Image (tube, rainbow, N blue to C red; front, side, top):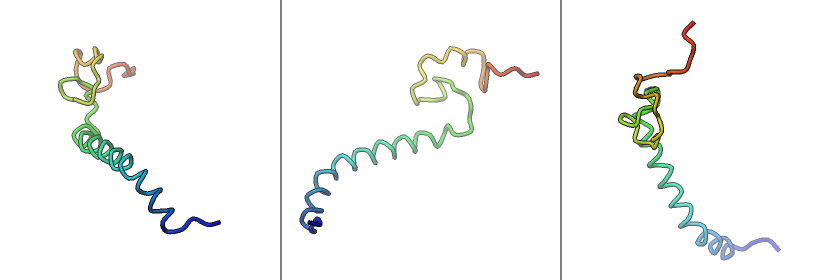
Length: 69
């Protein structure tokens, strides 16, 4: 038959911890991105969001591989 209110409470209890953890991770990511959206620096010194192999940042901020002409 159809799930009862008790069934839904049990299902909810099983998922609540995982959902709370995911929400916390996404909230941290959103907050970290606030300073980066639109920046375009892709620099490990300016962007702590784990771009450790950004060797092009040594050439300056912004898109480094786009053909200007």
